[in-house]
Length: 247
Image 1 (cartoon, one colour):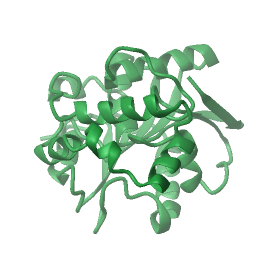
Image 2: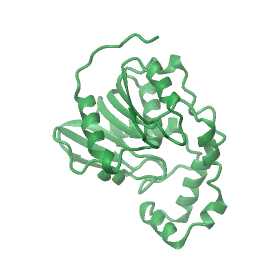
Image 3: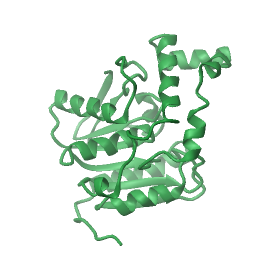
């Protein structure tokens, strides 16, 4: 598992999205935030990290992250996850609730909706063959373990179309999460209806909800990067306010 550690202060884990790599966070954090030690892995099968022979699951991906924290000697961390990284955090926060003090979930859902399943089904071997040379070269630069790695990443994405057990959080499971949680979701996300973000908000006891007007999927780059960093770091640094009752 490849990872970078930079800066000093409280440990902050950054988990990228599907088909992404850890260095994508450089497009969000223009500089290392003061007071934070950033822990930035390439998740299993992505970037410079290798992939076990077994099929990808978010649960196993979360176990990888928890094992990395063991390796680094961190018992308590804050974390930000984007899409695939956010779903990984949901598993980490339910597997070891006391491990994560605070987290930010960007474009997270408790389960896969139809729109995502339909999009995932298009990640076929034929789709790989249709990539232009420039597109293929860009993927190879980001994921340097050869074309076999690209094929496994497409298999991972395609598997979400038929996956029902790995991402199926009930309200009872969400209520076991003790981390102070900020849920960030675009109101025009084409893959994940905003109602699913509200479902997470209703289920996670110590949570807050930030609906991004006119926002799409993973809308924290470009012009949104600076306000996202400001809001996310303010949330992570905020003192505990206790759990709130929800209707």
